[in-house]
Length: 298
Image (cartoon, rainbow, N blue to C red):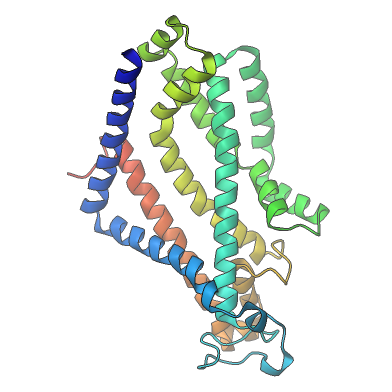
């Protein structure tokens, strides 16, 4: 009987949160527009490759170097004769995939360790915080570049793992701090009194009650990871030439001739990144407002 009541309460809380989120999006036209843009962008990244002959579009072809936009090439071609529109679609998919992979892996590590560390405390908590403090003191961008230099033959998986190594500490601190607060509340103490196994209490009782702040954090982290991957590619530490990315397209603007006379090589990618990051950030701010009653509209 108690279990069924707990499930009903948890379901009611989740429904209430999603109802609040829905209300915030309805009241905030900018957030609703950002959500529509993000959905359309994601569908574009998924569907567009189905209509592109990648082998033809992405193959180096000296006979079509630096061609301006035309019927054959909507966004022209680059310095290697590759179709810029195909590069944009492929690069957007790569950048978003890396950002989501890093966000999800960082979340899994940070949430798991944060919950366990905050719930149990003691020596495990002290050891974890020393590790977190050490990683946090390292200059993340410099260290990522150093690791990428050590592994010159990296791929999407290796790239994502290296970024994840320096990305999980923030969410671990957040979850740990919230877990320390929550474990002193009555519902956790009652679960302990009833003899519920610790890990069942952590993932069934504690986790749902920190989920609202996690949704906000993960949304904003996704935008940050898109920016980080794009920035690394722009600096020349991204994927190899054969693996298109948004940062690599924008990096072509470092050539003054390309910047002034071949706008089609970099402006579409720059606009795409800007719109994508602004949309995700706007959605994240709306979710943040939904979790804080003092910030809600109306």
